[in-house]
Image 1 (cartoon, rainbow, N blue to C red):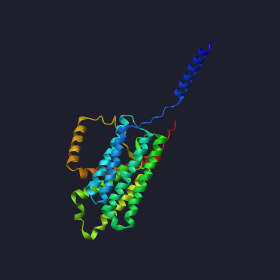
Image 2: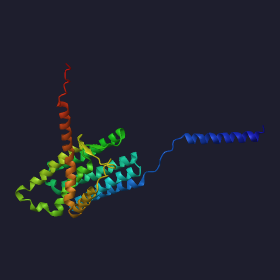
Image 3: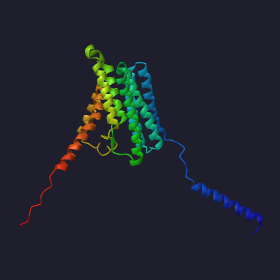
Image 4: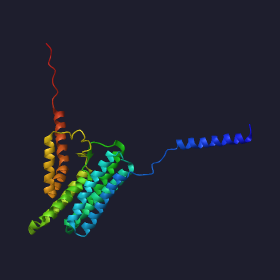
Length: 282
């Protein structure tokens, strides 16, 4: 066989060998999903703006920005599920943005709004709220990576916890509720707000289950009267959004302990229920 033919065969064989190696090598995804991460970045931007506005004592806009970030946070998860673009990068990025928007921003807001004059009681309340937000997000990441997506949340979600505090500030600033508080009891609402921050922090790190609203596909098929009720609810929300926002956030926060108590009572009744005695056959 001529030497030129041997060299040609050897060259073709080596080229095929390199191609086979490249096929076996796993291809890494260098890109990220753009659309859901844009909503997540919007969440971070709104939370960052809320911090700036709270520092400048512009509490109405600060609370409004946090409420906008709650909406954007819900949209990024919905978009990721609809487009099937969930990724570990998106999960970690979403948690970091949530800590800034729903842990740090509400803490600074309520501290500047009402708790700064009360010293240690005030800053301890907001610190514990921020710390429990970080713990709640870390636990959520671990459970999601090990167990996958579940129908319920363990503990109060951080957007809901931030929403309760923020919607109250939004309501009070819009209607000027602080001017109706007598001077003799003016510290009482602030201490009540600090107690609320402690309770929300406890609920975030608890094991109380909350509905995640991720599996509502079949449940949304309802009669026509449900559509009429939804239109009426939207009309009320458009008329008094401040009141509706606070009632929705507070109602969701309270729903977890109520359902937990009902499950506990139901399980206790099942355990204490006597077993039927088999009748003797004569």
